[in-house]
Length: 549
Ligand code: C2E
Ligand code: CA
Ligand code: CA
Image 1 (tube, rainbow, N blue to C red):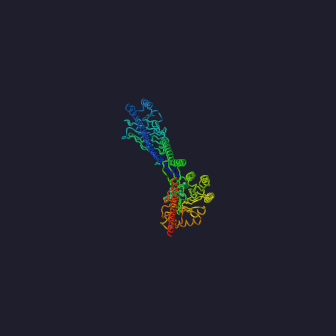
Image 2 (image 1 turned 45 degrees about the horizontal axis):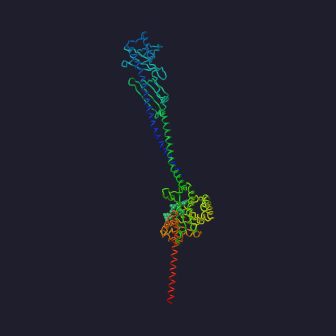
């Protein structure tokens, strides 16, 4: 559970990382794109302003030049009529008039009151022929410009350019609410301004500024906007990117969850199917009486026989079976199976024992009692022939319940062995509290016998303890004759190990048991024969002696 949980969490984190990294990248790229796009739009906006202004000035200058050329350059009623016509025809000009050298108005059409104030700077002899100035009259943020044309008589024709002509289109929608566009004559004179963005109070790091100069007149257009305004351009794209990344993240999470859980669930399905198909089978390892050489019985050891014939050891699946709770079914199955396979052998040999391995979880629930009963009750194997092994490697969570379960099993004849003694932390406490019948000394100590004295001492004290508590003792993992000799010296009389036989399938174990019996019978027969021969020889000798006498 915890392992797969961590795999799951890791998979989700990786998936999120894989999905959010592109989102960050997309954000940066989109913002960059938006900024450069906005700068382009602002540049175009500035250029349009300049173009409009130049156009208005050019057309006005051309009209004034034409008047000059046609010699229409006085305040006469005749000339004013021409001015009037021109104002009507030229949409961009509001008024046409004349000023003297000092810049004072001489006349203006259409007629307005002449205040006498100068509307243009005094004429300079070295100045350009065309002059541009500004009036205070405003229309939609634009002021009226005054374009003048110098006449040879030091007077100047002038025309007021309507402010409306300079009111340029407001630019793309997304910038409209934020940008401020301004058109200046020279550095100072404000001709036109539009938009609400206040560049003075804005964060300079978040401001885009574009300035465009006219090539023909001292005109300057400035467009200012906050960078963030541009972001709205890509907002829909960002939503799309975020949605796409979220979708990818979801997909990746789903895929990783699938991959992190799938093997688990597949493995589980495979395992359950294997149990159902009876792929878990008992192997039997003989337990020998090392004094007499007789068979004492066996330990049932589980194997997974895969459909391809491969035999898998419990080391590879037992932990899984235990943590996933499959072990209960598997143990029931293994008991039923071994009962079926051993009935024939065990029926007539009540001295043979059969050891079944249980795990700590079996001692958390009385169900194991009914399981064992169900397996052997109606069989020809008696409960007296059954031993259950409980390992000392893993602690028993509920010692009291374990004690009760053990006592109940013992009550109908089953005996209980403590497995792997010396490897766990239970030790003496287990032996005494649980009411164990047999202890199985772990291979670890058997391996050390003869090599180091402390092991011998440990085994020695185990034997002593077992004797004192009236318990049987079995040595596990015996591989050499030396070990058997030492065990005999120490007073151990039962052992199992590769020296005698490895765990084997039922038929082989039955054959092993029968061969031992035959060998025993044969040995007995030989012994009898030898004895008979000896007796016969002795008799013959007696007879011979009698005859001689
Ligand atoms: P265990 O109960 O201590 O079983 C003894 C293990 O030592 C067996 O390994 C056996 O094959 C191995 N063995 C026996 N003699 C020798 C020897 O001379 N030398 C060496 N090197 N090894 C020897 P196996 O069959 O692989 O079983 C491993 C463990 O799996 C068992 O240890 C037991 O804890 C568990 N197990 C096996 N079958 C079952 C079962 O049906 N139920 C439960 N709960 N656990 C089982
Ligand atoms: Ca065992
Ligand atoms: Ca063991």
